Length: 369
Image (spheres, rainbow, N blue to C red):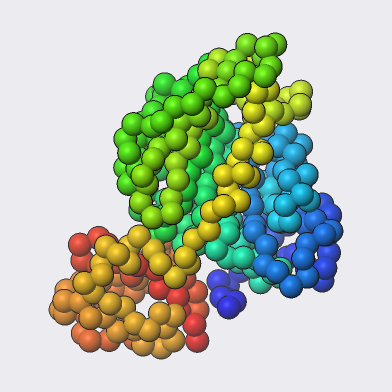
């Protein structure tokens, strides 16, 4: 199903195209750039995963492509990989002057829609990972996106309070966190600039996903003795539903992508006991989500919105004569009022909206005309 967001798509997709492509797309009058890779061996009649790999501050999409070598994984495992560029080589993740105020959430959601409309994408297998600020942005996608990201990963990234306070997931995403204890850019122990510590981020997600608070810890083989680092795998057990939470603690590791052979990938020790890209894909590959079920659906199960998708009228079975709001995917208020048995949607554009109840709970609504 294709939604009109009043956005001009400047990319013309070719049928059965493959290989690496640099492209741009127009988002509300702003040209946004990205690189993507389509393997030549994609199955003709089978939906494939879509993976986003997000660069760190000062880097580019092409840069993280070279650092992560995700194209090789895409070839071997038959998925499409996208490397978006942040405005000013930064992401809107609330890190002050080092960040951006661009509509990055809208940008990545537009890319999801574009690839879904032009390729045979498995919408239950959307994934995002990133390095440094790209890790922050991947966490933000799990927190705020109207699309279901089955899993997200962060290498050398964390979450600040602005992301945490705004985190109200519509879907449950599995999470993998890879971080060096000697990271001098995004401190493992947290800082005023970087935000929360890695243990705080893991505590947040273990609570959000309903996992045990204390992980099971495994020492991984120390196969490289010249990198002066080692790795512990922390597995948080008994998470709710199909969710998983994993932390690869790189003891002595710097602000780097473990396993990379890139000379300018980051700062500090590069651990070679693991390959971060392989670990992330191994984690992602078993994850999928029920795109018809959200966390919020369970929270407001005593009420019902129908039909969904809706056309011209939306019905609500909850308490009448109390306030509601409809917010579009850009966070703009488009309609508000009181429940009166039905809600007229005729004046709204087709697209994705959030229905917010008087007590702050929300549910995703799809409107089609």
